[in-house]
Length: 370
Ligand code: GLY
Image (cartoon, rainbow, N blue to C red; front, side, top):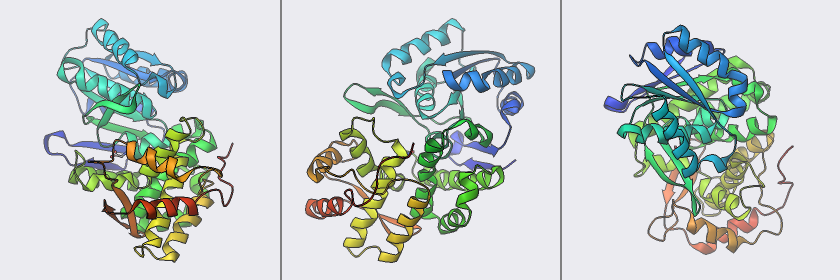
């Protein structure tokens, strides 16, 4: 089975990408740990579909395993649920040798990962991401955390899992909208660092969106390998890892001014990448043909490429400055210089940013697909 290694010295770990492997969770975990006790923290919806299979496999491999559910939704990435889950670990008499498994999307991965990072000052954990966004982004690289009423992910830790298990078969239970939104992170990896991946997506997009397992395994593995390389080069995001934020400063701001209920994260990032490319093109950093090539692929994926009509550019810019990725009162913008390469700039004038935003407002349909 395709396996990628995230190289972080004593914190290195494998990412396994395959189909129909949830039933092998116990065996795969056994090869990584001598733990006896395991707790699976699962999204309630995911648990109904896959929880039984994962638990059975764990007990067949000799683990004393139990499952606890968290209702679906970003609002559960909270201090309250963090406390409830810590109670569960105490009740299950988890000790320092025990293992926690996060089964679900990005919310579960971040929340359960942060529980693992802090229980007894840190116990082993495994990510089993079941959404595309979590498979290609959130589950890889050890960012864990919860939200504060004043901001997303304000409380958290870098804490690497022992294993990431990606079963592409789980994507069949997602809505087409969530598949398309999650896929923007794969396109992003192509644009920031991987021309062959970008080419492969262009050639195989229909098969990818039809969830053909072989092509999915190939592009997801490649995308995770790209992210693993970036994380290995800069685990704590001092510079190189910031390139993964391509499109995100614009995207987070759009999510924030629309109260997190109009767009999927990936849809906002798709618009953000389009605007970042427009800005780079205006500044002479990126060719018109590369800007249009990216936009064509985003559109073919069925994702929006423009801000909602009527949006005030300065409202978006203000929200960009509030994003926690803005440092020392300056925006750090990741801007493409060609397909496969980006630069990080903190010297772009607000007037240039505002102009690019205005060019990307509502000149075509930007409403999310059903
Ligand atoms: N999602 C960006 C990162 O993991 O750094």
